[in-house]
Amino acid sequence: MPVIRRWAGRSAVALAVALSATACGGGGGDAPEPKGTDAVSAAALKTCQELFGENAVAAVKADLGGEFRAFGLALPDMKSRMLAEAQAWTAAKDDLRRVTYRPCELEGKADGSARRVSAAVSWSMYDIAYVSAGQGRLRWRTVADGVYVASRPDIVGTPLVMPCTVAGTAAGQGEELPLQVSVLDKDRGGDRAVSTEQLLKSLAESTRELLGCEEKTAVPDDLLQ
Image (cartoon, rainbow, N blue to C red; front, side, top):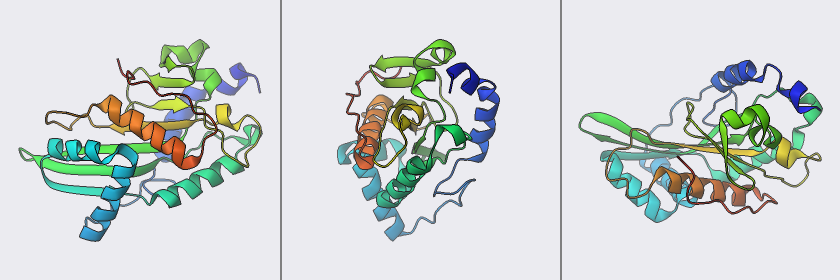
């Protein structure tokens, strides 16, 4: 499908989809915030450590202050759902609706204010042809061959997009339905011993490994302006 035709009116559609398709689990819409039981928090903390690394999570915990809690999704469940989405996708029937998963949320409180760091993962509504050339270059920066980062954040953080071809999918899926990850930590506070860039890089690499993406492009350290 020609890029110009595919992207006609896409900004308006993207806004509507972004507002309606964010989920904490796997369905459309916002899921209820999980209850912070010890068992849930411990399992979620392990998930966050798998995505960001144990040392990074420890550093974030120090930044977030007291009343620390972790929320998240079981990674095998997220993996199976995302693979099913990719395997069902076709360019001809793409309605641009995407489910956004939040596999890790870390929360604390300092000076009477809540602090939170959250990860978001989805298949992107922006294909590689768009983010790498033409109109897309007004918003997206090429930080490495095959790695693109938005020049400004959205409601789930600053998105990173990269090709991710998975088994059992239609031809072209890797570039027409690429992987997108984001980290939102604008109110983290603390010393920030671990940078947003480090968290974003770790999330991109760990998610790519989880899904079994064929592409192994190196994700650079310098991701954000």
